[in-house]
Length: 253
Image: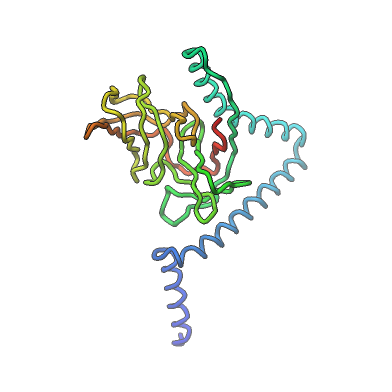
């Protein structure tokens, strides 16, 4: 093998290794190209699948079933909010019942970086980069959506920058849930006068206008006290298995 050919393979291998393991600057072009290819692949695959379904099966019946599934998935989250608003209405007779949540099914494109399972690029129509949105999966809180270079980036529960307001236990003790780069969440700034304990359920409070009240977050596994506040370690219900789709809460009220 000639020296020129050996030099070519050495440079090529070095670029690939650097792109995979070292700098974001090198990784970004690769990830951007891969994301475009994956998006086009998804679109083409879905188009072909729909055409095959229409050709070989009863097109009207399939379209009707697909629409029912879409409505069912969106309705599940809306029902969660309705149940909590109705309970609050019974508890406080002068409450106003105003419900207009907007939920959108969004698709995962790829991880932001190779090896980081907590951050995913999302494909969202009419994305507004000025807002933070909530992500849910099967009625469980999965994380939040933040803008990254005007693109929607999903931060799953375990990510350190994923945070949202929650209630804990029967007393609805308020707190802020944060990712911990582990299988558990940390809920901080819980006032010391609330009684919380292992086994208490954690739900969204809706006070951050990211989620509406009542979505399931997890269960308390331990509690500590320090400087007038409490902190709780929480085992989340949602396990970060990175599904292809999430529900995004576009509008809380």
